[in-house]
Image (cartoon, rainbow, N blue to C red):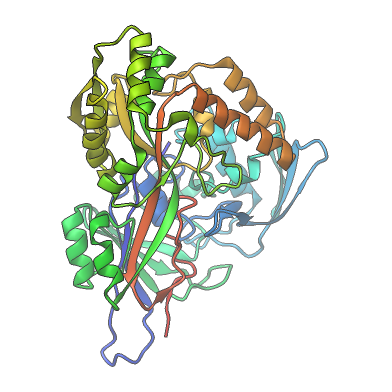
Length: 491
């Protein structure tokens, strides 16, 4: 899991002395610095922000709209029973160290990710793989233990990229992939540099070099952008400044969506949240639009369940949890808590949590629920809330794509335990027919909405501020990535 980290990236320009030559370098600043550079073992979203599609590639990949397209696999065949996938690999692919990428490397990568001692943050993506067999250097067969309609989707994640055995010892600081850009340099705390891979097997990128800078402070982000020290800021952290950039002819503002469901998480095993009446009371006390307007300056789409509203299978269940403080108070009375109660509200660093937390605290106070707010850094949040489950309420954005499956894990931090929900998910995993999958996804969304597992707030927006001349940037974030493969300075 990617620690729910919110993404930001920025790009800087090297101006040519004559001003006439085409620019071929860009500086990309992101808000969070990756803790290490191995997407196949680190959980931080920032690793993919820098490396996904740029340095590392998988069998399949997400395109700008979230569709699954070819990656290192140029084609594949699926057996009638849905258990055997035969992948045909691209020819002439080399790693950045000059070694050949072939089916043996794919087998190594998949076997390493699913091994018992694997530290892959998304090990569940590989759980259904029973066997990986090399047929020839450009062909391999993956056999599943049971059909999984999400398998090609799973292989597109940053956690499933293909790595070479000989690079593993130093991958955390010297990532070696097959992508259009090679890792060049990392000055920790400041910047990370990529250089065009001139022996890339696919279409050559327009950019020759790219520098990622890490600017977490909203005020510093605004200053760097205005001074044109950076050319692109993906996930710009100060939404209140966006109108100013939109009105400035030097810049463009791209307003996109992410896979981040922002929720008020409730500890379903801790009193009084083990009572569905109380969970329901919490959801009716919340005015989503006030949070989107007050904390996010209007950036965000209200949600009524743990699913992205831009997904074709999204079901609008907002009516289950409409803002109704009177109903909230009567539900608390029915639960024997007419005088309200006090609980903890633990908040990680992003502004949606810190700013949103203040607004939610006052909305809950209005129905008699008092919150003791604690501001936590990410490492503390992971330890206290995610690992030790020591919380009543928390606010976090779940940025992984299509992650409703977390509700099938009773050990997950909000501790929802429902055998009926797990049965629906098991059936979903075994279903490849699109209509059947849609029906099951609707059922899953409805169950958690009507169980009031968490209070569903909004789908996190992502704003990119860029120099006006730059083209080819992703508007949306179907996965946490700043894909530079199609980016150029338009002339």
